[in-house]
Every structure is written in structure tokens, then in C-alpha cells.
Amino acid sequence: MRHKDSNGEARGEAESVQPSGAAQVDLNLLRTFLAVYRTGSFTAAARLLGLSQPTVTTQIRTLERQLDRELFQRLARGVTPAPYADELASRIVEPLDALATVTGPGGSLEVQQPEPVHLAGPAELLTHRVMPTLAPLVDKGVRLRITPGLTEPLLEELRAGRYDLVVSTYRPRGRTLASVPMTDEEFVLVTAPAWAERIGGPARIAADGPAALHGVPLVAYAEDVPIVRRYWRHVFGKRLVRHPAVTMPDLNAVKAAVAGGTGFSVLPRYLCAAELASGVLVLLHDPDDPPINTGFLVQRPGSSGNPHVALVRDHLLATFRDW
Image (cartoon, rainbow, N blue to C red):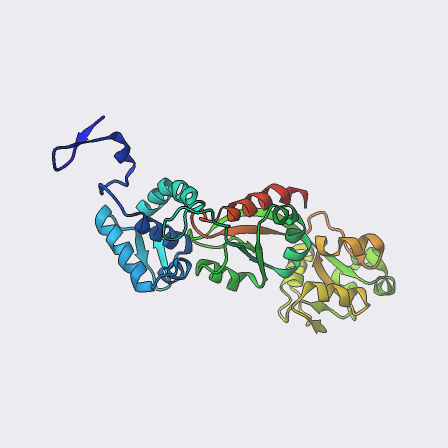
């Protein structure tokens, strides 16, 4: 089908791919829109694009006027996409991402090396599960920047555009972050062989429950012992009323302390599977329904313009089943 423009000249069907409400939209405006859509913040998008925040704001307002549509709802912290923004992003993300692989920031034709992929998550899960699976990607030229940390601040920094992907210990709330279930971690009650023998081993726990651990020091990740409290509530149906003898904000250090004879703790099974198999640690209880925590792979809204982000994401989701 052919149409006539304001000058009476025919124009082809190809122009129908333009976003509705505008005959022609500057690609730079669409790039800026996509950056804001992905990061959820004008400020973060400005850093990503190397622009000033006022420039990003002006470009988004210009695009909204051209399209005659609201694209983002302004929040106290950041922005959230309006319904039309989701539709627009789905239409332009693939062609813009494809264009970004062969054009520089100014649009000149050149082959660009993708930026490093910024991945963050709990140190233990990154070390024992995530990093070993990414070796084939590094061999293919993927560059990684890994940051360990606690889930809540990492998700805030993901929203601000600091990371591309975060391995989260819980599903983030709201719709600004896309999350996919990634892995389940089972928690186990463990101690060193000397303590297991001293209290009567798993048989004593099965008979007397947590009372069998009276007098055995508790080693925990934090003062509020969240993992141990969850285990007590889920397995024993009781509230944990004791305080830890030792706290260390590193589960590998907790494992080392328990293996060295400091006391008992609750750890993810993947973290201590080798020590349980070798006898360095003893499994004190094996309930039919152990507590499970689901980890999620979280990505900033939209598909990243860096093709290696999608490569890392898809690789992790394809390999986690073997963990």
C-alpha cells in the first residue's frame, strides 16, 4: 500500500515500521528511550550513554511529544515504564541491538567489541556454582566483571544501572526487574565428627530434636541467624531462642569454623557436599522435607544492547539444571 505525505508525494510501505504517532523518529531518541527503559532511571541512563541527565530528560520529553504518548511515570526514585513503553521497547529492541553491534556511539560503521558483562550475587553461590559454568563463555571472548554482595543492595544497584545481571536469593518485587527462577539450594544441619559423636549423632537428633544440641556452640552468618532460624521453624516447628557463639558474614568461613570443631551450623548443601562426602562434616539430620531456598537470575528491564549479556543469561539458565 502507498500513501501520500503532506507534499502529495507517494511514500512506501517501509515507513510503516516507524512508531505510531510520528513520521520519523531520530534513532538517538530511541537509543535514549531504550537506555532509560533498561535502567529504570534517567540518571543511570545518562551514565550509560555518556550524556548529562538534563539531556536525557529533554530527549525523552521530545520523544513523548513526537509520539504523543507518555513513556515513563516519574517516581520518587527512578521511573517505571508506561504501558506504551513496553510495546515500543518490544518493537525496537532487536533492530537497535543489532545495529549497536556494528555501529559506534555516533553511528559510524565499525566493529565494536562488546562491553564486559557486570554480574553480581552472593559470594558463595558465585564461587561454587556460577563461575565454574562460565568458563566456556570466557573462552569465546566474553569479558566478565563479577561483584559479590548481599541481595538487597545489589538489586538497588541493578535498578540504578550498575549491573547487567544479579543472582538474587529472592524474587524482587515490582515489575521493573525481570526475574527467572534459577536454582534451589537445600539447607542442612552439620557439625564436625567430634561434636557428632559427643552428642550421640543423628540418632539423638531424631529422638530428641534440637534439645540434643544444648551446649554445642552455634556458628552463624549473622547475629540474627536467618538461615538457622528458618531451619528450626521449617524442620522442628520451633522458634530458635539461642544466640550464636561465633558470627562471620561469609558462609565459607562458617563452614571452615564448623569443620574445625567450633560447633554446629546450617549451610547450603552445595557448599558442604565435598566435606560431607569426605567425612570432614557430619549431617546431623536428614528430614523428608528440608528447607529450600530458590535463587533467581534478575536482569534490568528490556534486552541489553550488549549481546554478551543475553549470552551469559541464557547460558546460566541452560546449565543451572546440572547444578
